[in-house]
Structure formats: C-alpha cells, structure tokens
Length: 214
Length: 226
Image (cartoon, rainbow over all chains, first blue to last red; front, side, top):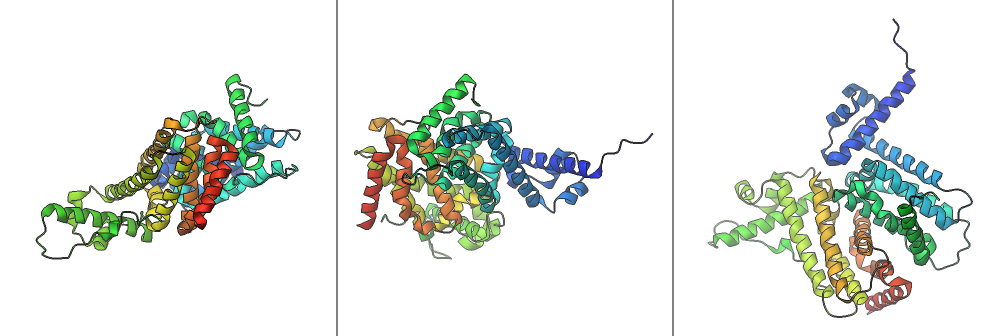
C-alpha cells in the first residue's frame, strides 16, 4: 500500500512550527539560558538532523520564535478593532486582544518579556519596532495638537516589565489582571493621562461583563 | 551628588603574612570576591566567567572561595544582594522621611539614578548579566521588584495620594527598571541623572495627575540647574 504523500513543503512547515512551539514551551518552563537543543528536539519529536535542517543553532531558532510570536500578536491586535473606531478605542481593543492572546499562551509572554532581554537587547528592539509604529498609525489621523504625552518607548518597556514580573511571580495564568495597566500604557503616550484612565476603566468594565470586543 | 556607592573595590589587603585576625581576612576575601565577580562578569559576560577568573581577579585561593560560596552563581547572587541592599538603604534615607510625598518620590528617584550612574559596572551586572543566569533570575527579579514596590507603598500609606490605578506602584517600579535597562544597553548609564525631570513626571502622573506631576518636573529641573 502506498503511504499518503504529504507535499514536502507542508511537512517542512509543520516541522518548523513544531520546533518553534517546542522552544517557546521550553523557554517558558526553564528559561532560554537553560534550554538545550535536546529539549527542543525532544519537545518537537523530531530528530537532531531535522532541527539543523531548519536552524543553524539555538539562537536562530529563538529569533524565529520571536518573529512568530510578534506576527501572532500583530494579527490578534489587527483583528480586534475596525476602521470606524476612535483611536483611543482602537488602542484599548488592540491592547486587550494582545493580552488575551498572551494569556492563552503564557509561553509567548515569557519569551517576549523575559527571555528576549536575557538573550539579546536587539531582540527587544526588534519587536518594539513592530509595536510602537502600529500604535502610532492608529493615532495618525488625530489633529491632536496637545503637548507631547508620555514616551511610547518607556511605556513599552513598562508593559514588558509588568508582564515579566507577573510571570516571575508564578502568576502567568493571571495575566489578564494586568489589563487596566496595559491599556493605560498603550493609550497614554498618544491620548494623554485622562483618556488613558478612561480607557483603562472601560477595559476593566468590559472584562468583568465579558464584552471585551464591544 | 551623593557619595560613591559602597565600593566593593576599596577592600584590599596586603598579600602574604600580615597577622590580621581571621575574620577580617575572611571578610576582605569575601568582598574582594564579590567585587571580582561583578568586574569579570561585566568584562567577559557571566556565561563565560569561570571560578578561576574570579579567583585571579580577586587574588584569593580556590579553597577560600569554596569556604565562602557554593559556586559561581552563589557568588554572583551574593554580590547582587550587597549592591541592592546598599541601593535600598540609600533610597530609604531620602524617601521615608517627613515631607510631601511627590517631593520624596522625586528625591528617591534622583538617588536611584545617581547610584547607577556612579557605578556603570554594577548597573550592567544587575540589569544585563544577571538576566542570563537561567531560572534563578526569575526569583531574583521577583524579589527585587517586590522589595521596591513595598518600599514605595510604605511611604505612600502614611499620607500619600490614593492612586487612580490599582497597580500604580507597579507602573512606577516598571518605569524605573525599563528606563535604566535601556540606558544600560545603550551604555549611557552615566547620563541617567539627566533623565530625572521627565522620569519624575512619568512616575507621578498615575498617582497625582498631570498638573502636580508637572510641578515636580519643574522642581527636578531647578535642582539640576543649581
């Protein structure tokens, strides 16, 4: 009997995805520093040879995992708001969606907030560049004219430290608790303190009534 | 300017026979080893640092090292402890005193920025090198974070404003860590004190609103030009 044939590019894609999932899981469990190629290979249920067909080393695999996480979060953020939303509302919805995605897979949060710092500050810069311009774009149509608000780079770093602490404290299953603060941080650089507080309260209210995507 | 942070490098003993009491010799050895692990880890990376490197830098024998520490990690964690204890003591001195809370918060921040600026090696060690030690980093991070949020809350509960966000203190500690981390990575630690006005503004807003935060920003600018 003939074995069902899987097109090679598809099976290769699956393998790559399994490897990425495995490094995310291992980093979440024991940090990047302590993760070995054996951990990744074991978690992905592939051979060492297959690993090296996809990535030259652990670091390259980690970078691919970061890229993958960033893309996933960008998609979640993009799908959460619609063109008709006010910038402040769109920002709140995007921040809420990102936190929900992280809460579903705390491994992503660990990878982005903790391990990226330990591996290479350049990795942090990489996804900061994927985040801040996306937020700025939401506000680009605003004739704001107000004094420049808080520094978005700092807000980004604050969000990262908040997530890292929640994970380090063993509360990675309770990431949604950070929703009011994260929404505040996402809105305040562009909309200012009062607007950020208002959005933060809205997000908290939505979360308790279960209508986050209103 | 505050004086130099408690400088582990100041501890030196003459080599060879000196007839000093045993506990003084041991104390000196311990401090020299702590200073050495910071210096070596910063210059060649924590991961690449060996116990032999630390011994060479400190001028201390292997046997003495293992009487004092289990291993490299133990030594690095002890060095970190000494540094953070010193920082907390200095912050406490200006923060837990009578006076308006926003001004005390600004002073505490000023001391913190000066402390790191005065010792870029300590800054790099705490912020970059220790993050690569593996799982031990998480408990270390959590403990430091909790320590400084507790300290801020202690000063707040006496007569401070009630924060509009429930985790405003966490936002404040996160802002300080994030900013210092960034300056460490960019190797601009010595310029940290210049960030005081903007960072004060940033930290205070969630607690006291824009107007009062702006007033403290002005106060920080004035104290800088004095």
